[in-house]
Length: 242
Image (cartoon, rainbow, N blue to C red):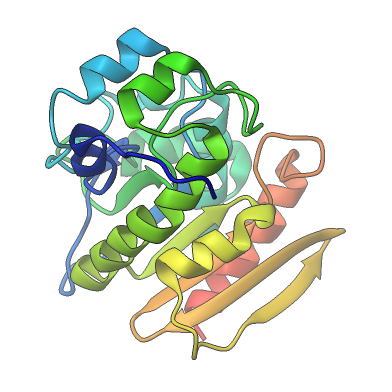
């Protein structure tokens, strides 16, 4: 990793609640289910990042205004289907589940949505970096940014999990398993794994929290069908009841 002069604005922002859509963090007495992706999609630009860096991301995020706002995104729809199956329902009934349980919606309880990394890109390729991002963050490349986050942001996510004690953290993106482990899993926790319909799931029990790592829900090798989402949801329901 090349030496980078991370800006103070970025450091404060990236070690706070940046990259979090929000919802209900929960507590030890009323634990939530957390969903953690890799990074925001859509592709942020200089203007977007400048606005983000104007505050220190001390607010955990209130979530979406309505269930319909939540379901406007394919990633969220797939996620809600999985949550519906974990709750004991059928993925085909995900819209009813969304209107009833209201995951990730303002002032509602039980679910929280976040990401490993705070910046927004069209995809996870390392070449999606610009000189403008370098000026604002202090990093020469996306690789430098990712490595800094691994050393500084992921421990902050670990502190969040220890503080709020979610009962379940669903992590999407099996190629990022080591990053999810760094954020949420202690080294002493045993890894369990299984293949379900040619897709892989890993899980860990860490005191009061269960962490599962699933394939991404929207690509060709991921949880891209109702059958897969139903099977994974039923398996996760079993895992958290063990």
